[in-house]
Image 1 (spheres, rainbow, N blue to C red):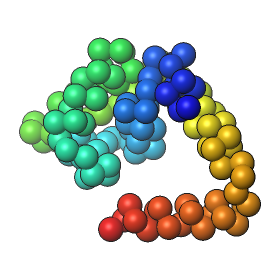
Image 2: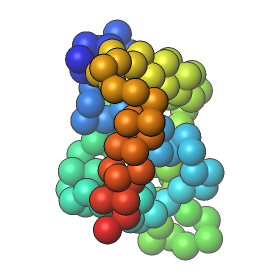
Image 3: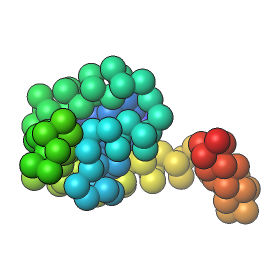
Image 4: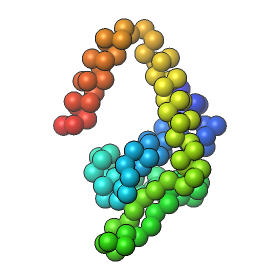
Length: 117
């Protein structure tokens, strides 16, 4: 369902999340992104390379520490953020329509707790 909603944006469920994470963290390094999303480094690198080829993300060597790469969104990547958020919200509404708001909130709290572990 989400893949279909993201397809017009040239994104999918494997890479949209990176756009949102980079948008939400100014001056983010690639290592910080690894720590934020808890995925294998090779998977993250592969997705970042894909987003760079699509012209949505840039990776620039840090002037403070030459071993670090700073990630940022291009103008086209930044322009996608509200569209991604809208697509995710619409899919979530369809997916959770049978749950009460309290049930959705409880599920969100539980999933957040599991993610923090």
